[in-house]
Length: 243
Image (cartoon, rainbow, N blue to C red; front, side, top):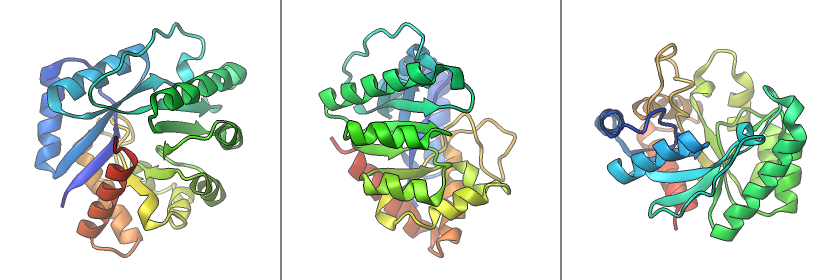
C-alpha cells in the first residue's frame, strides 16, 4: 500500500526532527507528503521539509495572518500549491472582513503563480464559495468538515475534498455523510499533523505515518480494499498537485 498525506505541518524547521518523522512515515507506506505552510514560521518549516526530505511544498498565508505582517513568499523548486489559505469564523469572527480581503489576495497570488490552492474553511462555507466563484481557482478543500451540500458545491467548482482523521471520531457523523457524496476521483486523505490524530492514535501528536488509519477507515466506509483506496487517493493527489 502506498499512501499520500496531502496536508502536514511541521512545527519545527529542525532538519533532524523532520527527518525522523519522515522515516516513520516511509516505514508506514507513506511515499509522498505535502508540507504545508500558512504563516512565516510554518512556511519556513515546510520549506525545510521540502529541501531536506523531498516533501512537496505549499506556502501562503492563512486566516490567522489577516492582521499580521506578510513578507513575500519566494519561489521554491518543490512549490506545488499555495496554502493553506481560507476563512475561519469559528475562532476569529471579529476579523471576517480582513480574512476575506486576505483570502482574495491569496487566491489572486495563486492564479499569478499558476498553482492549485489548499483551502481551510470553517463555519464560512458560504463566503468561501462566494469568493471562489468570483476568483475561479483549482485545488483542495482540506480537512473537510462541512455538509454534503457544501461538498457538492465545492465539487461543482472542480475542487478535490481532503479528509482528515476527524472522520474516525465518534461524533463526526456529518463528515462521514459528506464523504458519501464525494466521488472516487475527487477524494484525498491527510493528517493535518500535528493535530487531529485519528482513532486509534487520538491523544497523541499526529504525524504523516498515521494517515494509514484514516485510509483504512475510509476504505471500510466505502466498502473497498484499503490498498485500492490508498491507490486511488494517491492518483488523485498526484493529479491535483501535478506541475
